[in-house]
Length: 418
Image (cartoon, rainbow, N blue to C red; front, side, top):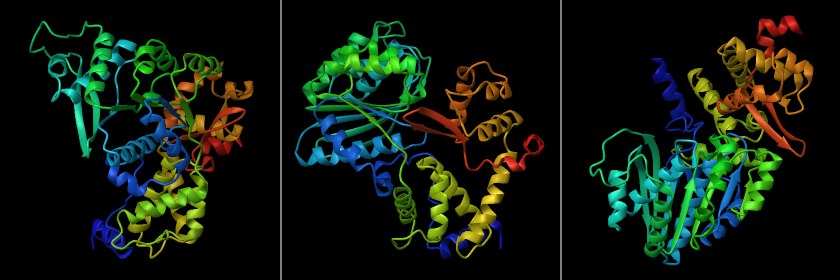
C-alpha cells in the first residue's frame, strides 16, 4: 500500500475524514463556531458593548486566539441582532497595509465604499476609482437584515476610470467620516472589526489612534473592535487619556481543560460519528500535549497536527504515551535541526536563561552579541509569529520562552557548552 493510502486508511479507522488541526483559524465563521470553546466571559462583555456602538481592544500573545475570538464574536452578534429585527452592517477587515494614518483611512474608506456600493452612488464611485489598494471580498453572510462582509487588502497601481475622482493623493479622512455618517442612515448599527492590527508596531497603532478621535468617538451607533499586543506604560496611559476604548480585554492563556475541549471539537468537526472524548489520543497524551501548549491554542494545533499525521503514517492503532513519546522525540529532532544556526543559538540562550525578558542580564546579552533587550526584541517577535518562542505574561511583564518542540540536547554546540 502507498504511503498516502496507509495514512488515509488509518485516519478512516480512527473515524476521521481528515486531519482537522490547523495553525491558522478557519476562515468560515460557521465552521469556526463548531470548534470555538471558552472565552464566554469575553463574549458576554463584547457583544453588548459593540451593539451599543462602543469600541473594544482585544489583546494577547501571538497565537492566543484573537482572530478566532473575533470571528466567533461577529458571527454570534449577527445571529443575536437578527433575532431582534434590526438592520446591521458588520465589516471584518484584515491585512490592512501601510503604517501611516492616511493609509489606514484609505483602506477603511475603500472597505466601507465597497460594502455600500449597492445602496449609495458616491460609495460606488469611490469603490471604483480609489487608487492604491486592491480589495478582495472573501465572504459575505446575511441573516435577517444583518450583513457580514469579510474583506482583505492588497496593493495595486491602476489608473482610475475617472481622473477627477479620488486618487492616491486624496485626504481620505473627511471622505471616510462622511461615508460612515451616511452608512448610519442606511444601517441602524455598524460594527467594524480590524484584525491583524497587532502586527503593526505599537507606536504606529498609537499614532493612528491619536489621529482618529472623530472616527472612533463620534459615531453613536458604530463600534470598532481591534486586536493589539503589548504596550509600554506610557502608551497605556495615552490610550486611557484618549478614551477610545470602552473595553480593553486581555486574552489570558487557556486552561488545560479548555484546550482539551478544543481538541474534542476539532476532532468532531471531521468525525463520521460524534464522540465526547479525544480518541485516537488517550487522555494521558492529551494531558501532555495541553501542558506543552502552555495555554496557547496555536501551539496546541501545531503539536496535534504533527502528532496525528505522524501517528497515522506510522500506522499506530492508538496514540498512547508510548507512541507519543517516540513521535515527540522525532518531532523535537526535526524541529531543532531545521533551524538556522542563528535561531538555534538564540533559542539555546533563551532556554539556558529560563526565557528572555526586559530584565535580561548582561551575561545573556553578551551571549547574544547585543547591547540591549530592544536589539533582540524584533527577532523575538518574528520567532513568536513562527511559533518558535511563546510569550508568557504576568505582573512582572512578558517573557519569551522556547517552544517545547525545541530540544537543546540535540544540538552539538549546546552539548559542548553545557
